[in-house]
Image (cartoon, rainbow, N blue to C red; front, side):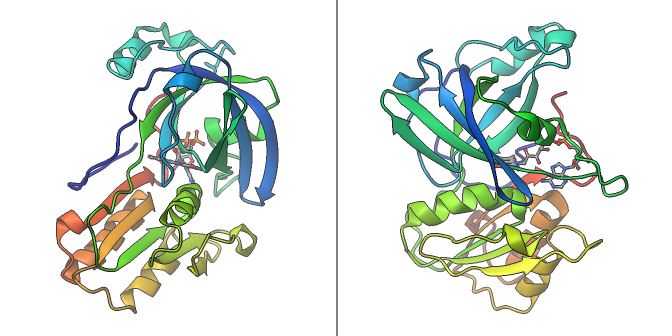
Amino acid sequence: MAEQLAAFRPVHPRAASVRTLAVQATSRPFPGFARVTLRSTGDGFEDDFEYLGFDHWFRLFLTAPDGTLDLPMGGAEGWYSRLLDIEESHRPVVRNYTIRDARRVGEAWELDVDFVIHRDTTTGEVDGRAARWALDARPGDRVGMLDQGRIFNVEGHTGPLLVVADESGLPGIEGIARSLAGAPCDYVLEVPDAADRRELSGADPVWTVRVAGEDAGEGVLEHLRSRVITPDTRLYVVGEASFVLAARSLALNSGVPKDNVQFCAYWRVGRRAKRN
Ligand SMILES: Cc1cc2nc3c(=O)[nH]c(=O)nc-3n(C[C@H](O)[C@H](O)[C@H](O)COP(=O)(O)OP(=O)(O)OC[C@H]3O[C@@H](n4cnc5c(N)ncnc54)[C@H](O)[C@@H]3O)c2cc1C
């Protein structure tokens, strides 16, 4: 989805090509999340990749419904038309994910990725190719990756910082808190389950826990309505689309200029991500 509707400057990777990574390990660090650690496979990623911290994100290519992994190999430019050139039955499923953390292990890179395990609200079944993939992932499984760089960029801003997200933004928020290294920043964050809350490096977030049946982000919006947002604030908001737009409107109505709002719709209620 990656709808970036405001003027802000993302930081692009120095070089990026579609690469193959392999699952190294899996775990369940929080009830609502599955963590998959991906490891580079010696195909050039080791030379290209530079971890930018913050909310560094990437396109994740998962096996096609027939189990094959036929990737649109090559550089970032033109990746989408190369994807469409792949015959539909072999075409990989593409989703957007954030690098929660990254480290060098010898020559290789290891990337931790946290997947929200979201469920159909009627049946309770895990709903979504990526969410299901993360639960079933096994060491050695292969995926494709295309580095996209980071969205969060507050360079030159000296006023207050306000970071707002639902659970889909939490992996990136962990990276942001780590990268800000204790610089003043307020966080208002929502999770579906109190046990999904976590320590954020150098931060003391306001947490809201979603009440069953409530829309994503409702608790956060309620908090924002009761708080003073000064016009010199820089707002970063990611999560469900309607919630993101509502949070943005609250900031604009408080006098925050449009250019001081960085926002990205990570997902949308009732709508599957576009690519397969
Ligand atoms: C830049 C960027 C970075 C992102 N980083 C992460 C990340 O690190 N971790 C992460 O979990 N997500 C992240 N997302 C969101 C993720 O890409 C979407 O949630 C994606 O739709 C999940 O794909 P899926 O195959 O599981 O579900 P889909 O097939 O896309 O959707 C199936 C159903 O599930 C619903 N749904 C989708 N996502 C959610 C959700 N989070 N909560 C509740 N219902 C949902 C849809 O409305 C649809 O009805 C990011 C998105 C962007 C744009």
